[in-house]
Image (cartoon, rainbow, N blue to C red; front, side):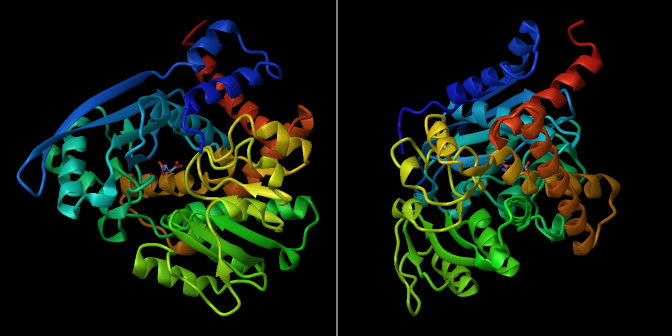
Length: 418
Ligand code: GLU
């Protein structure tokens, strides 16, 4: 990982590139390159040993031209304000690519979760929610899970928000457990969406899933479900890794066994099976596979390892896994990139379904959720591909142009500037 990488600067540079394809008025560009609001909060928490520690948290509400702010929040020791802003800009673009009526936001708290108890994290979540009590809400800004946060975190947030309001507000967060008004299919939605657009890419590139080998880097919620759906599609998942371990089996892994192991052991460390050899998170990128799916965090494919990639398709399950300086190397190698704002948009798409169900207090079947998701992912792939043909550019740039076009149209139709 390149420590100094500033995701926000890169996001702005990519946005700036859109200007060589799309005519963007200078003032509108200025508007698009600033977050509408960034909130910083200090969160005093009583730790298990009785000490009080103050954690810093952020919520960046980037743009709400197309609808309420929407985006997850993460707990990570490396969280920075700039990273959160960049991720909120990406959420704005992501919601526009899949054409759901949301703007974009993101939150984060600087905290190392590895040495925190569940009770400490619960207090932290409740404090964070209270600190943002006037800034979030079903019509304003709707948080969801992200790195190191999950359905349980969402339950705490929803409960704190609901208690403060005096009534149940299921639509304030998405990614909740089903018992509290969550949507069927939400947990697996991001991984499912990654594979849905990969299937479209394979059709486009005339690749047979049965002859397609896949490597999945990152084996949390996104990576493990992506591996499961690749497997169901008939692909051969040959390698999976996480930050602590991983395995490679050229004959194909037993994905279900790996998932079960990772759930029981909080990761892949120590997992092995017949015919498999250990694989680490870095070496996986050089493997001889057709699809490489980075599904963990940003900055993993850089100018230093881009040249070693042999895959035909990179499916970005994570947000920002490829650095800007790696892009030209991958493009030169004619690798077909399914960019994050398209590839991992299945999560926020089912979040949208969950929000709609919560507002209506009317819940859908899993088939309904998945068929609607499939329709949206297919349409978004096609829209992006059409833009890439129209503007004669790669899929990443095409997705950016498509998204900026939609955000600009909404802003203009509102008459914000002229
Ligand atoms: N954190 C996920 C993302 O980056 C999901 C966001 C959401 O569902 O609001 O897309």
